[in-house]
Length: 350
Image (tube, rainbow, N blue to C red; front, side, top):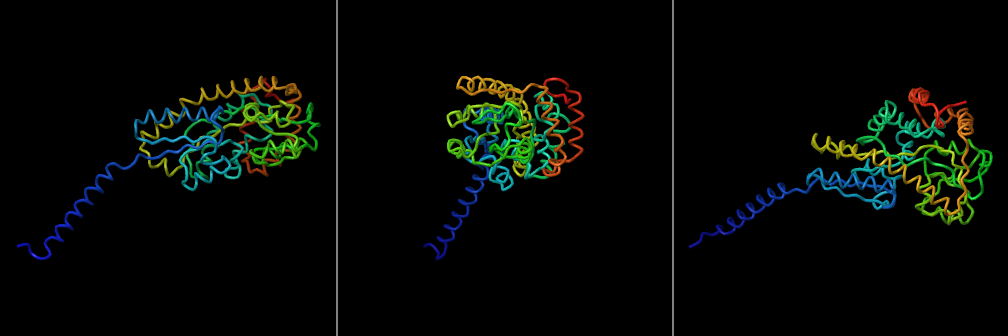
């Protein structure tokens, strides 16, 4: 005859053993660390292509130790919001443009100063890939909860695209020009006589057609991707206003969860893609230029001497811009020293 209370005790014991082994199994089979990578550009954009290729390579090389997910087209965040998302532990990696940083780390604004106006790509890379760029990356890591795992990707030269011709800088007087971001960009446009406006990208074609704005600061590839000649842009003032790049960022709290060998593998995988991505960005800009010409856009390309003269004009206001943005004078001084060693190709001052 079964004693009273024996059956419930057996039931409790079975439940306890079930939970013990279930929890132990669940712990052993815990999901892989999730690494979501966010970019805002469309799948066909050279930036998205490069970052997606890195994501696929990383997933392959980590051999199931990471669950890598790539999101383009701002499906997670626009770049203007992604730095906040990284700080809020809502995404693991992003690669936003340099023009989004000065609110968070003002020294990234260095690369938007007039000193970079019209400089050759080689001169820009000498600064970004050298001691100055490394110091700026360290400041980003010190002041934001992120890690910069390697060198930056190129977008390519930004110019002014307009509905009426700009042949010399004086033609920009009073022109309402949309800028994607960056206090340095706005200050430079205004120093050249224009009126810088912040307009959301989805609203841009309609605002151009309505005549609310007359110009856009961007790149050949971006104009091509949005076919903005259909919205009234007819001219290009090809003066190399600045050289936009994208900075890779990984959330620091996620980075610390990775083993040292995974951290090393991630850095090495990123670095393995930088040169190819930069070459493809340059090629994409060249191909986009041809497409713009075939679409009927008219290029006005200042001579190197005129670009150097415009840079000298802008530099009269550069100290004021530096103070407004918050760029450290030492970084600026080091940059000028680097530029002295890169003569020609639009890098010399009169």
